[in-house]
Length: 202
Image 1 (tube, rainbow, N blue to C red):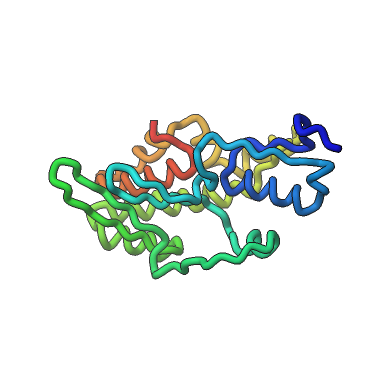
Image 2 (cartoon, one colour; image 1 turned 180 degrees about the vertical axis):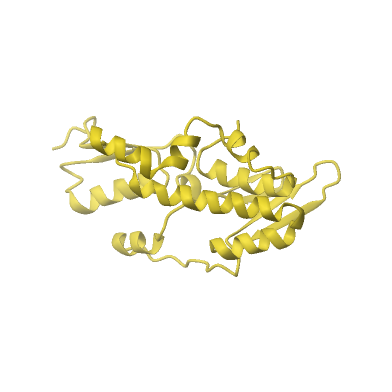
């Protein structure tokens, strides 16, 4: 008989990563002999794939996962997924004084997204184009990074990742401000992306 105070695996956090880890363990182990314990501080599991209500507003959170359907298929979970309707996300900006709500619809796809922003905010079009092109270049540099680089690989990264290195010590706000974008909506949009990446503006 298994000692219920001993676990073969303890998973801290019941978000999609924690739930998946615990389920995969249970799928490949006899949990009576090798039990798994999942610990979650919130009253319900799900983390960033749950909805919550606050002050009369319903918020859908999200987590960046390239292809959730592969994971669901692997775990044998059948769930109805909503398809994109021409936009990647919607940002709701609420004025608490007037209750006025502004909705910013962001399309999927870098070029479509860039074109829409440039058309919507023509006074900042050159800055937006420069910012997104630079961001794309920096993203491509990520593929040259190594988790545990050798000395020679570190030297190579200095030449292959110049934009990442140049901005590695900046806060998101300092990085964003250098492009001279003045439209507050555009700043709000990119602050949302920064927060998704756990990069508070300051």
